Amino acid sequence: MIPKAKRAIKAKLLPWFAENKRSMPWRSKRTPYRVWISELMLQQTRVDQATPYFHRFMKRFPSLKSLATASQADVLKMWEGLGYYSRARNLHKAAQIIMEQHGGRFPKTAESMMKLPGVGSYTAAAIGSLAFNLDLAVLDGNVIRVLTRLFAYTNDTQSTKAKKELQKLADRLLISGDAGNFNEAMMELGATVCLPRNPACSECPLSRTCLGFQSGRPTDYPVRAPRKKIPHIIVGAAVVTNRKGEVLIAQRRAEDMLGGLWEFPGGKQEAGETIQQCIVRELREELGVNVRTGEFLITVKHAYSHFTMDMHTYFAKISSGRPRPIHCQDYRWVDISKLRTFPYSKADLYIITELERQLEKES
Image (tube, rainbow, N blue to C red; front, side):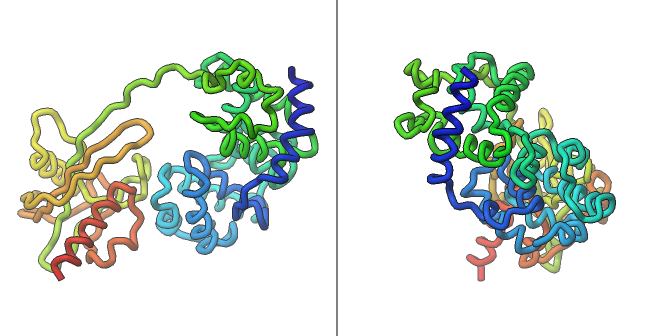
């Protein structure tokens, strides 16, 4: 089956890709730096969503040196809204390491790439094949779907064993000397034809070779164990204002989730607490102030990879104490008009949008 599939990839898939590949900004002016940034953005993000972020990021940081010399806050601000902010922090650290230890030149082997923060086997294979034409096969969600259907692979693809087996399949199918095209063609097929729910098998250049298609049930693949139910949490957050009309924001600690981002202070509701009691306790623990809660502002519903959240947000005033960073990295009093100069998570951006809306309504 491997030799047959490899012949079909070379004779059918690669010509199909040459004719049908989508126009993407990172496919032009291809450099290791541009490939690296695009690959990090495309993990967990669709091409159409990532494209404006890529343009914005490249305009602000057109070179590896400009990224390395920027502040972490600037990098996080340019990444704002993409999620998975550890990637932004890691690429910033990695850029500094490349400047300091590699003379500003991106390392050219998978082994040396994987020593950089945030660069795993997938990212190294993508950069290596696309920027340096190394014979490295990538294995992402699209490639996994194509492979499991092509070979009617029945093991749970979430298991470590399955991922190793699928990586071996990809490695054996790789067209030596043309790894970049092979990888992009496999990913493009999965993204545009071999779709999760409604695959366009009649348009697939590999349909005659595909065991999943021949079975009549291509959507039976890939096989995944049922997902465990993820927890749901309730959070209270405060928009604390002072006499100047400024708003209090806090910076999350570097080691915490969403580290380095700014937020409206608050935290998880504990058993037996009202939301208002939760906010009062969290502000005391986080910033050392006692507050009185006021009017309700907004409830933000948001889903992360490992939990979902309802964040109930209220206005508040400090009744005693002065803010100090106890369980946060820093704090600021900021005019509402300047709130967006800081980097936030998507959930906190909804709060800013509602604040701006109310301010505009009042004016």
